Structures are given as structure tokens and as C-alpha cells.
Image 1 (spheres, rainbow, N blue to C red):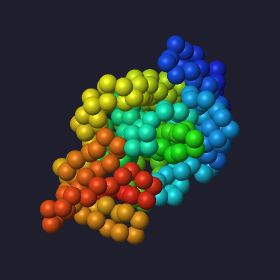
Image 2 (spheres, one colour):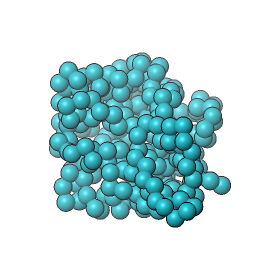
Image 3 (cartoon, one colour):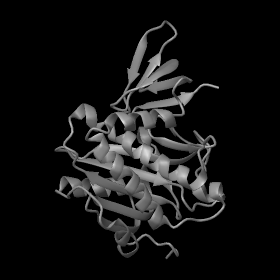
Image 4 (tube, rainbow, N blue to C red):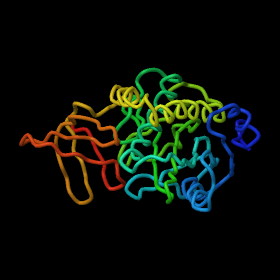
Length: 263
């Protein structure tokens, strides 16, 4: 077992006195924290149900890709029941991405940025990713993967991007339970702001952290390829492109959309 093992005993004491009552389900190896959290949500698990694993054998990335989850990373998912209209619920991926980015900035400096819709990059390398999926009847599952104490030799192969880790960027390992608690603290404050009067400020924070606003990009939407310049980031998590002919095209952060900056 790792020195900083992720167990209920190491995590739960760090999550006391929070607005969300966190309930920890910790595993050694699991197929997918998202799948497990979704099953729990469908069976009625309350908001704050948290699934954490040392490794995943079938973690989910966007567009059906497998999220590689070696030992040393931080892989977790949690259940939300936000009681938001559908057009607002999509913005929770923004909330989660900003929470992770802010935590990373505190650890390795201001170079951390969000690549739309919800990947966190440091110095042009992917360090973390966020995914939000529906679990029915208003429930959502937020999945987060962070290359925390992953040695460089064990980082994912650069099929679509170069990867990095907190270990590589900071030059030392971190306490993963403390890292998890910090991310959840950053998330909680923004989650309740998003559901209340702090919504506009959160969206501005997201825009300031964006890697893509103002950039020329290529978007893949299913089988379609679209090129344009990122004109705006919308409150529902969508991105607005200005096309070459002057028209605007809005893309939502669904599983069949990816965005890459043109060099």
C-alpha cells in the first residue's frame, strides 16, 4: 500500500465541517470510479457520495477514450444532486475544472490553464481532466483524474497530447488525500456560488483561466470538422466560434466534441 494511501481513514478526517456531507468509498483497483459512482447514484446515493481508487482498469476519457490511471494518480468521482435546470447543469463541468485548476496553481504556479471544455494543462502538457455525466433523475456524477505522483516514465503515451504530473512539475510528491480535500474545498465554494448570486464571478474566473479564448482552433463535432476563432465562453459551458465567413457557431461540451488550438 502506498505511503499516502487513499482510504476512508485518510480522507474523511479532511472533509469534516463541509457544506456537503461527504461519504467515502475507497478502492484499491476498480474498473471506473465514474461507473461505480453512477451505479450508486442510480440506486439513490445522496449528494456527496465519493468514490476514490488507487488505479482504474477502464477509466473513461472523452469521445470513448480510455483514461490511463496508473498508481500514484488521484482518480475519483462524486455524486451531485444540484436541482438545476438542464441548461445550467452543463456548467458544472466548468465549476469542477476551475476548482482543479486553482488547486494546481497553488501547487505549481500560474501556468495552469483550462483547455476547453475541461482539461487542465501546465506548460502545454495535460495534467488533469474532468468529466460530468448524467445519472438520471437530476443526479450528476463528476469524475476527476489528476496525474499526481505519477513518474514521468509512467505517464500516458502522447497519442493526442503530451502529459505531465504534479510530481514532474513540482519536483516532489504530494499527499494525495490532502490534494483531494483541497480540490473538493475549491469545488464546494464554487458549486454553491454557481447555484446562487456568485455565478457571474465564477464564469469570469473560468474565462481568465482559459487556454482557448481568442485562439484559432479546429473543432471536431462527431464526423464534422469546424475551424474558427474562439469568440466567447458561455455560462452553460459552451464555446462560441467565429467562423471565416463571420458567422458564429456555438459548441456544447458534449462527449463527441473536441477542440484543438491551431499552431
